[in-house]
Length: 207
Image 1 (cartoon, rainbow, N blue to C red):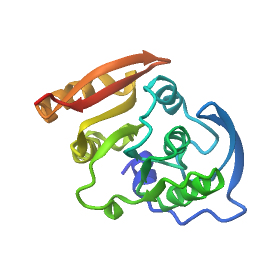
Image 2: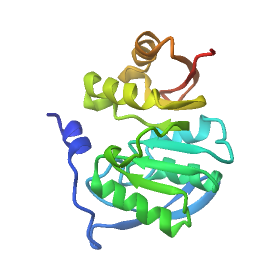
Image 3: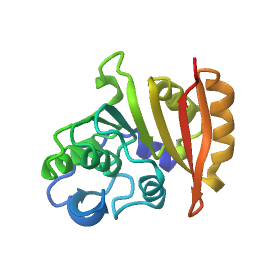
Image 4: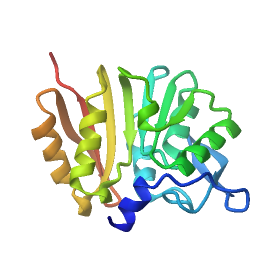
């Protein structure tokens, strides 16, 4: 297992107070203070891929059930909740340290709609009106494909998913795979390209 795979699949204990640190970033057009810690994805701030997704994805609807797949310490889930305070946002990760930080950040910012949980804790039959994700490309194709097959097929009939993928890490091949393996149920297209990343738009195919 590579270092990246080990990070993604290791359920780290919640960070202790000395490990946690506060950083100031921009989310949802406002400056906020959040907590991060070592052992999570991008603990020093907003990574480039997530920044592209947050800048380029269309504004979320006012209400609905949303998913942040691979939430880390929570920048995507927090943005969704800040922009759509009446929505329910499932922040899903395998890393308990990340989930603890996502919960702490949601509480500190008053984002009462966020539910940070493991995949096993997601209620059966949940359908998502919106999925935003910076998926863990480096875990390998087999694991990544299994994740996307599982979660993209949970899109509601009128649901939309937006995935940000670095161009040199296989965004075009991933787009082709989604179209080939998850069609005709789902349709995928490139929404935009920015800063070396592509944002893919996935939706249910028309009946």
